[in-house]
Length: 185
Image 1 (cartoon, one colour):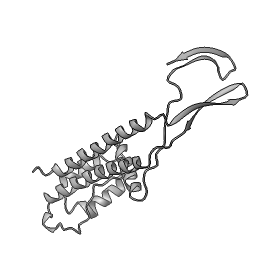
Image 2 (tube, helix red, strand yellow):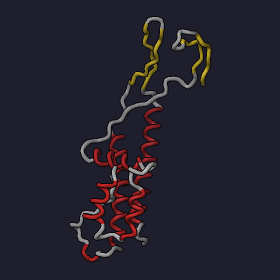
Image 3 (tube, helix red, strand yellow):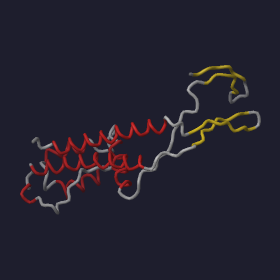
Image 4 (cartoon, helix red, strand yellow):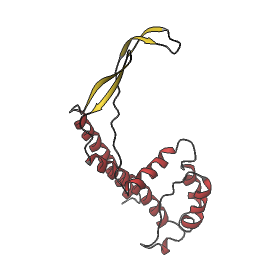
């Protein structure tokens, strides 16, 4: 067994949840749970989407399961690194190690010094620092942290986002009051 197999298994399980979510969302959308209407404002018709059937509640639980597995994969990674670290013999089931996710370097360094440094090789500081959300491109990690923490206290709220029109053509008014004939699609 490779030391990272547990983390990999959690990622695989998260992907299975995401695949199941995709299937269930497709199934839900195939029932046409919304309808298009128009609201008239003077001489303008504004397209609206009305939800006839809200998304099934269980979709939130599937999202939560995927979040849990993704977060657990990161925490298991830190645990496996700690098992190979300088004080691996002092690890116990009461040791609270988790993958650090911080929006600023200060709190990250504090966590490193207080919780991680005793258990992880000093060489791990740089790669853990480089993946933090305060470095551009790593913002999804902050989103995972936020959604994972929120999921512990309530199910994620689902909404429907439906494009109003796939194509559009006609005569439109510009901001200057000029009529323009155009098509998009």
